[in-house]
Length: 306
Image 1 (tube, rainbow, N blue to C red):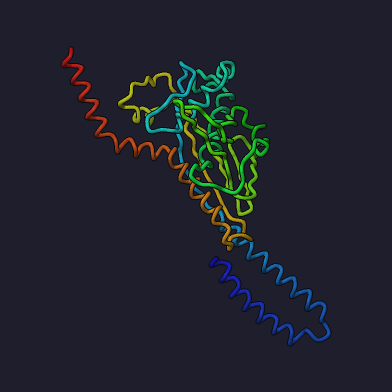
Image 2: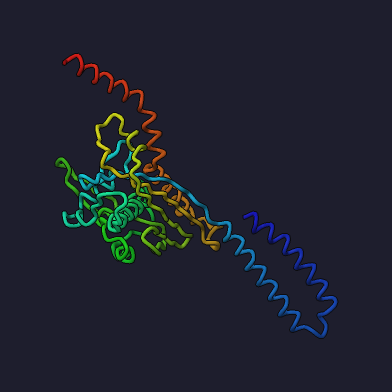
């Protein structure tokens, strides 16, 4: 906004001064050239202003996610305070046995494209099923399976039913209905590669892109599992660096109806933070004293019983 206002004042003054000089000296006898030159100058000024606004309209939000895979059992495992690992385990558990065997990785140095491919699918599932799904907020348009056709070509392991939602489940003789996925007006999905999902709307763009690193250094997850017996000797850590880039349509930025889009961005960042490794550590640190006391009590009680 400041760029826009300052540009108007500065360039407006310059154009006014230039026009006065040109008009006084050259207008008579050069009417057509004068009008053409002035029109071209105004057009270039407008393009410059819009370009400056576009260059400064994008913002970036970054987060890190951690998944843990057990090579011996061929499955992702749940890590305390880490909902991303739970979602990874559920997605793989829902696959058939043949697909699970295809994804299997025995060692970090295996050139296993299917495992890396599936890891990218896990992130895509989180983006579509968790990060842009805001249960307490209603947006303008419902997402249908037809809207995800382009993504389904790239991501073969997605659980589409859980992404789309609008399903009814019977739980303990009760009924649970999941809300259907909705997005701001005029949305459109797009993906240039397996580690990128872009959402365009009438008001701007949202771009999710990520990098995956597979390592046998599982210390971070072992720390979170201090009070839970998990054998990490055959485990790998899948570390995901996620970047959310977003920006506004320059022609919509001053309009009141961007409120819905603003809320969508804010809620998307809030959802991502719930799955971040940093938040997992914070939750662990907050509960550590209580967990330690319980662990020691159990340990001493076991000794006394012996």
